[in-house]
Image (cartoon, rainbow, N blue to C red):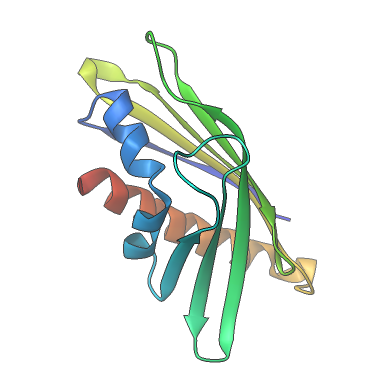
Amino acid sequence: MPTFSIERTAPLAPDEAWRRLTQWPRHADAVPLTRVRVLTPDPTREGTRFVARSGVGPFTVDDVMEVTVWRPPADGEPGLCRLEKRGRVVLGWAEIEVGPGPGGRSRVVWREELRVRFLPRAFDGVLEHTARAMFGRAANHLLRRS
């Protein structure tokens, strides 16, 4: 079960970086062959659930997530969103932390523990490398686009 983190700085105020990273449907634009559907009413808060469906045709995987910590950045303190993966195939958790960075920028740390049921541990390295690249590109995309 690989655990990894990526860090980014963005020329955005922390509240704007937070907004861009936590608008769940926007993640579909950042991850190829993925659709995101929010299952609970707005606004996002603890208990919000959504599903990211990735794949083509019959070869799809649902990543069902629930927000278990929702603390937006405020008063110079970093914000933290924790997602628990509750699907049948994709398991683990993700955390998105957004706070003040150098020179008025935002500092983003995305941490993730990712498990894929039935995938042997021998594939952990490949899974980590692939996930790190995919989530890094997604973070870049989300932070660049308003």
